[in-house]
Length: 341
Image 1 (tube, rainbow, N blue to C red):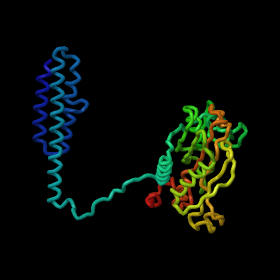
Image 2 (cartoon, rainbow, N blue to C red):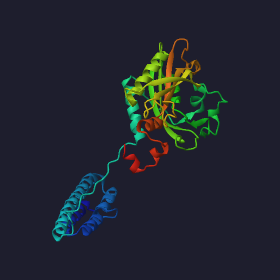
Image 3 (cartoon, rainbow, N blue to C red):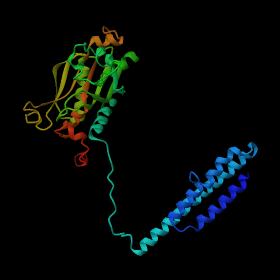
Image 4 (cartoon, rainbow, N blue to C red):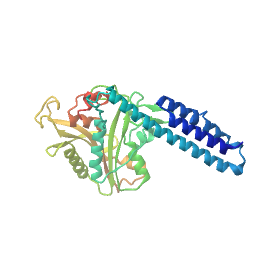
C-alpha cells in the first residue's frame, strides 16, 4: 500500500477538477467526493492505521497537506464563482441596486435587567460587593436561619415551591446572607441580585418568578442611621435628587426594628393622585436591622455586631421608574413595548 502515491494522485485530480469547475453546485460535489465522510482523502486517512509505523508519520503528513491544499483551493474557487455570478446577475439586471437595504434591529437588555444593573452599580459605588446564591435552596437557609418559624405562613406549600429532600426554590435572595456570613467574619457588605419564585397568581403586580436585590451590611458599629442614609442616597440616585423618602414601621421576621421605604410620588410629587392612591407616597422596598436570632444562626456574637438588611423587587422599581402599569408587559416579549426603553 503506497499512500504517498495515492495522496499525490488524489490531490492532482482534485486540483484539476476544481480549476475546470464552472458552477457552485459542481464545486460542492467535488468537495464531497474528496473531503466528505466517504471522500477519497478521508478514506486514505482511515488507512493510516494499516501502514508500517515508520512510514505512518510521513504518510499522515502528506495526506493532511493534500487535504488542506484541496480545502484551500475549494474556498478560493468558491469565492471566484460567487463574484462571477454576482457580476453576471448585476449586468443582466437581475439585481435591483435601487432597492433600499434591509435594516436589522439590534437587540438590547430587557428593562428589568437594565434597572438591575443600574441598582448594582449604585451599591457597588457605596462599597457593596455583588454576590450570588443558588436558586434551589435548603429550607434551613431560606426559612429557619432567617427567623421564619416552622408555622410561618410563607412556609406553606401553597406559598412556596418545594423540592424533595428538604429543598425549595428560594422565595427571596436573603438566603445568600446566611451563606456569606457563615463563610466570613465581619465586616460584611454585600448586595445579592437574583431570580426568586413564589406561588403567586400572576396579575398586574405579581408574577410567580421575579428578580430581587438584597443588601446586607454587618460590622461592629452599624446603626439605623447608616441604613437610612444608605437607602435615602440610593432612592435619590435612582429617581432624582428631588425625591423625598420616608420610613414606615413594618414587620419582617429577620429584622428588628423593620421598616418600609416610601418615596414621594413620581407623578404628582407628593400632592396625591391615582398612582399613589391619593397618599403622595409610593412603596419601594423593605429594610431593617438584622435580628439577633439571625446572628446566632451564623455564629456571630449579637452582643458585639450589628447590621442592616434591605430587599427590593426589581420589577417594581422598573415599573415605578418608567411608569409601567402592568408587570406582565415586561415579559410578553412585545417588541412594540420593549423598544421604548
